[in-house]
Image 1 (cartoon, one colour):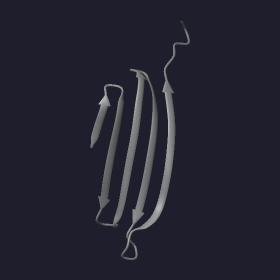
Image 2 (cartoon, one colour):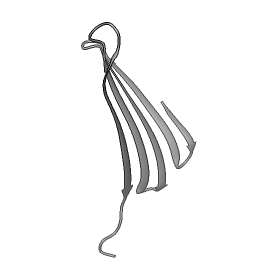
Image 3 (tube, helix red, strand yellow):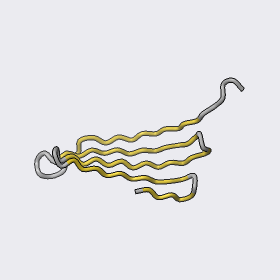
Image 4 (tube, helix red, strand yellow):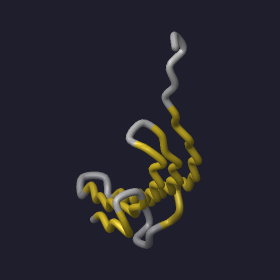
Amino acid sequence: MTYSFNPKVSLQALLQYNDATDVVASNIRFAWLTSADAGFYLVYNETRDDDVGSFTEKRREWILKFSHTFDVFN
């Protein structure tokens, strides 16, 4: 699912379930693009495993990224 607040700011969410291993994974990404080749991203990932009948936390992580392209030969 993706929601765009405007052409440069968006929020994306992804939910996955693996029925063979009973693993649920979610990913939420906030993107703020300053131009076509630069942007700021904040990402949250979480993975849960249903190994005892109720979902227990396996892993959580926050990722902060800024990307920018520049011309070295200019």
